[in-house]
Image (tube, rainbow, N blue to C red; front, side, top):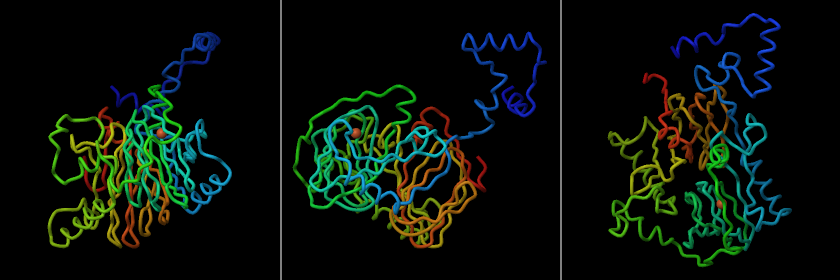
Length: 367
Ligand SMILES: [Fe+2]
């Protein structure tokens, strides 16, 4: 029956306009009632019809604006972070990059501290360039360096401090829109300074957990969030390099020809690093074009290295290092690599999969 009703969206039955019908509609308004028959096409479309639109933010625009903010706007308690949220042009002026995800460029000047706080929302940082900031997560200082993915899962206290004479910028990803629209968020202030100004090369979480294939017996209990605070670039790079070398040797290692990819995972479960956000890294050989695909849910990419393009909703857009783009639900997309092309990706896939809304269509592969 669902098919029948959706197929009729374009020629929905309409009652005869009579004074009695108008009176009925006025009564609906008075009682805060909306009949389904006047709006089913909008609220139950035949396939996802996102208000969010595909959009690209150029790093060459973002970074100077972050630097200017650094000159004009102090960082501290109240504002909490010097973070510039990317507002999808289809989402009514909110700083939502998609209905579920937040993405911002955050900027911390020389020797500045962003005070500690905690919130229900899950967060990560990805570093496209720079170094010198430590993020302190539940008292564990975590070095932030180029190419690293840093996690701040929900309800962990966190603050950042810049230990150098140079500013640093990175991107933040959170589930703020999902949290806001579903009224699930709590927030608490912590220390005005970070609780530990030590600058170790490796956090305590990494020292305990980051040995390939080895699980500490003190950590046999599975956890919802990954206990790893930092996924280092040297590991990501090596994993991608080996996939392409294996492909050269004729071994099945890549996701498709010329396309190496990894997912960052929680080592206690093998699942996503946090309950609401999936993080991945993709590397294309020069000249590779990925198959066109559509997916339920939103994805955000940031170019890490190289040059290429994204074909997004049928439009080809050139990309340089640092550029960020969003792919709303069910918008077809593919990537084209001009040089070797490295991209960080995050998405709301764990939400979609957990709730069984996920669906993927890959061109040439009927599912
Ligand atoms: Fe935060």
